[in-house]
Image 1: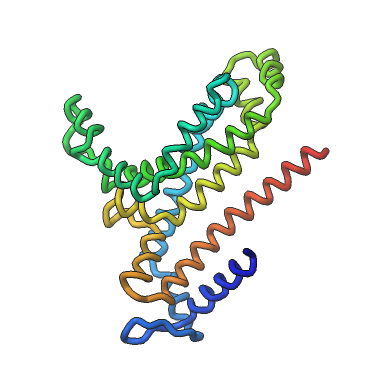
Image 2: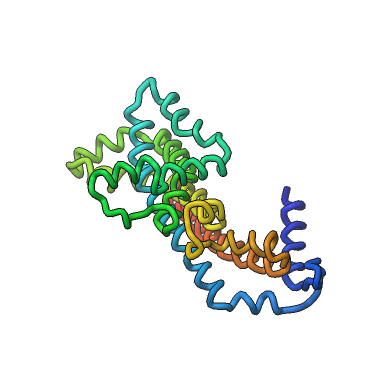
Length: 265
């Protein structure tokens, strides 16, 4: 797997210095034009938007996943496996199909907005073709990747710590923040990485849930490969995306090693 990954990565990196002819055929080369083009303000805007959407998606998924994982792991009893199945099974469906369904549900004629309009929400309010719509699609698409690591972390946690926390800290919220959150930090970090990485490079949600002003870097890469037939520029954008993702992964690994060292002490 490492050989295939490294070989593919080297090909992408090499072609990012290439050129295309009038027919759109890509050739290896040593041009810096594709790298220099990344300084274009339009690319920077899209990259920052993608980063913001991915961070916001990770935060929302974390807020949603903590109570869900807590309830299933510690308070579901014999229904634990059934509840986990209810969380996981819907995600067996194709991602594109789920996004089409989500865009239909949240469209102006869908059941959600139709109900809100009847309740008095102004007709100018929309979800699809907006930034919040893109984030809603990303949350729906990747929330399960946050629930499962947190659930596993809470299952491994010693529940007597919670009882001791209640004796020492008092209220449920303070016990949760002082005991449960630190004890499940590794699961939360793993979930953040599992959500952030695919959300950063996603293009389906932005395509179906967002308008032309909500495109993400994944949409730019797709357009360069399939629309503009400019593979070298698409490879340059891919390398930029991978650099951002590698920074995030390096931060996670550093934090994980630090936590392991503290646990050993």
